[in-house]
Length: 208
Image (cartoon, rainbow, N blue to C red):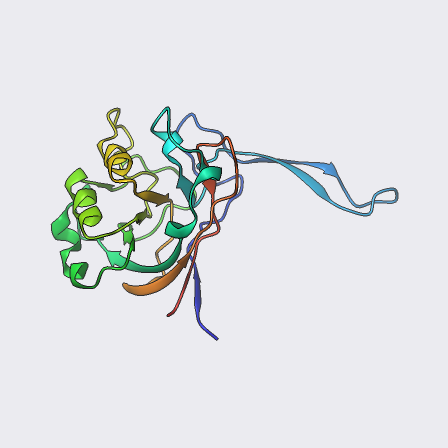
């Protein structure tokens, strides 16, 4: 049986979100008891909680919603690349050791230890030229263990602008601490939310 790596951080009350965004909340609509045979909970949280896929609508007023996206980029062969030694902005030179064997999907590890319980305002981001270089090599999806491809305090969002220009898809908040650099099969399908700007995913990697 092929080994599977779960690269989705847990989603619960302690899950970090961008400052001002909607934290995880849960209450019970029904609970098992004398007159009720089932538990049913009600959930409220940001579309960007945990491992998630951004849709173009997140950064483009006329962009596609997450429910309208083609699923092909979120399923298939991918490379995990270790960029833990990079600076605050991941440059092409930080990834070039893997450029000779790139799959259509690239997941980049920046953290030594993923922050499971608190938001990190200094998480690594991508230099726009890095995303441009990856797109030029046929990469259709970029994944990161950071909360965003851009610095958390960015107002211009140059990385997201490249995603829009190049038609690339993105996964953020991936948990890559236990995944060795290499090639895998990615499975990370967003929910079919027809009016939403993003969706949580249950992201996994499977050995080839």
